[in-house]
Image (cartoon, rainbow, N blue to C red; front, side, top):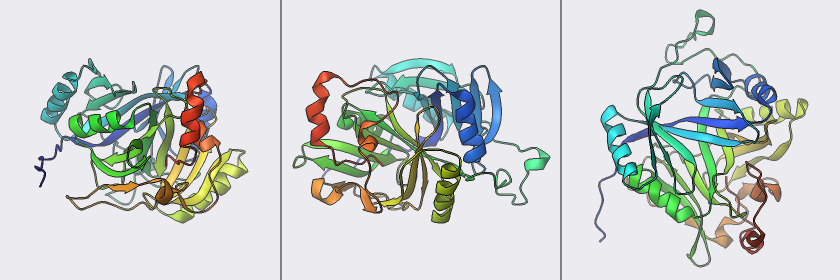
Amino acid sequence: MAERREPIQDIAHLGQVELLTPKPNESLWYFRDLLGMEVAHTENQSVYLRGYGDYAASTLTLTESKQAGVACIAFRTVSPEALERRAKSIEGTGLGVGWVDGGYGRGKAYRFHDPDGHLMEIYYEAEKYTPPAALRSALKNQPMKYLGRGVGVKRIDHVAVLCKDVAANRAFFQEHMGYKLREQVVFGNGTQEIGSWMSTTPVHHEIAYVVDVKGLSGRIHHFSLWVDNREDILRAADILSENGIFIEAGPSKHNNSQAFYLYSYEPGGNRIEVYSGSFLILAPDWEPVIWNEEERGTGVYWGGALPDSFLNYATPTTEASDDSTTEEKEIAAFDPL
């Protein structure tokens, strides 16, 4: 029997995602008016938002930029001591950048890159959201009132990023962040790791690493926001369609995660998922579920087939290198949910 390693339990959860947009006003309209997020703060070229169920002051930042994409992904630790431990571990990999001011709503943070080059931070100090009287909920255990504006997304759920080497990034998150592997897609008789879904909480995944068929680095496939039920996703499809937003895929159901989903492009170009219904993982000895080509199929349990853009489009939309064509054909059936 393999020796059991004591799990690292220093990371509490995914804390904040900063998206870049070349159309800041239009992107703000999408997240605030259509998805129903609340603006918490504005500073320089950035707007800080949150869902009505997020406890933190802000969980999504929109920052004006020439290109769409992801600027930074931040994770909260369980304590100041845990922050120091994870920073020391990451620093030893040579991927550390150093200590920075965490920005609005957060204390000091340790900044680093994952093996693929995505910029990330870990932090502990976080300002809890205190609603003004007009937004105070009658439910004392709910951070703010449900306003019923737009879709009414409740909280952030996960982020899916693309990379050249899934195995290297997955191993980094397991060894230095303490993330648990939940599900995998492995092709070529177990030789080609196509995607890995991981979390440090009972939710199915907080971060997913998926191979970039363009052979590029540092890109994001999608950012996901949670709603409580399938009806909310059906209503989201109506709201987005009524307002001229392109719906790329869904409403449908994934096979791994078993989640109900709807994918659209926000006006700045980033792919956004409205998401619900994935299963929780409570078993401390969970064995990762591994899907091969035949079992995985297109990643759709039921519903319409995913378009080619779902595999090929990501932000920033840098053109592919000339040698990426073969790799793209080899995994054309894959769905990075």
